[in-house]
Length: 364
Image (tube, rainbow, N blue to C red; front, side, top):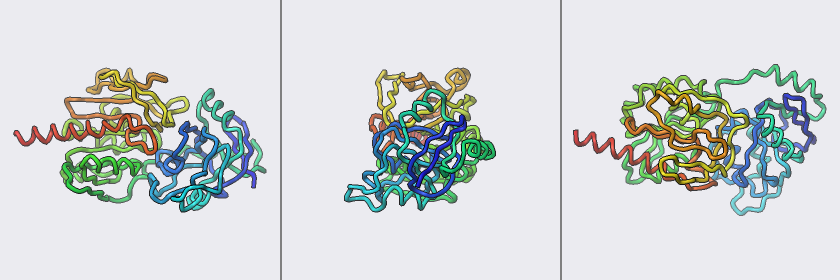
């Protein structure tokens, strides 16, 4: 069965259908990673986005039960060059197409993904529609124009109730504000001796303080950070009281809570090969990224935050610190799986901040 991708500039791409037989309007973005399509499709940060994979062969190792980042498939669609529906992997339990079909996510293969990605790179990310091949460009454009841009992505993917993930011999209690969190963040926190209490994005300050956290973590997630006013207001109350650590959207929300600004990138950063420089040490780290927005460097003036990392491809802000308030955040994913492990030390830094605050409290 044929499927068609129509972009809002009128360009069309026709290919073979896989996944769910449904129509979706979404933002079309690209990812440059070479492995990890299961983690990508199950990452809530891709809510309402159709992902174009630059690596040509997708589906060849199937889907395994242990490797999900979330059981919720919130992405808009998956666009690939070659789709393989006969996986070779002793761990696989389902094919990629089966999982997409169950999640209501359409896929399209057989198109010129190099041409499409170059278009996104040169002209910027745009909205598009994955639809039946019989739909004309004019019909597709009308559907795109009549579909409002959603502003409730975090609300849709955040946990609906509080839940716990404990580890043996825990040293710290961390409250994680779930804006669309990847499960590997929880796993990594536990490796560093933290019990994790995951709370919905709209949990109140008083509810969080009743949990007596040693540190607050703000997760990754989808959409425009300025839409998540509940978390921004929460962080304004928390900052300076308890150590704060943010990843991706959490990084942007911390910046907004301190009075900085964010802006949308032309086509975003998505992939496991972005070089980032630690301004403090001069060390270069290869990082895994997934975001459409960035912190405005000029807007940091007058705030208590300082830039700690920059992206060497476009000089965007990749990390923020405030030693006085025990705050650190990164735009990339130090817990990436699969992906580079260069930045896992950031979890150790968060632990150091909690140790320091705990030590000061004991002395008092």
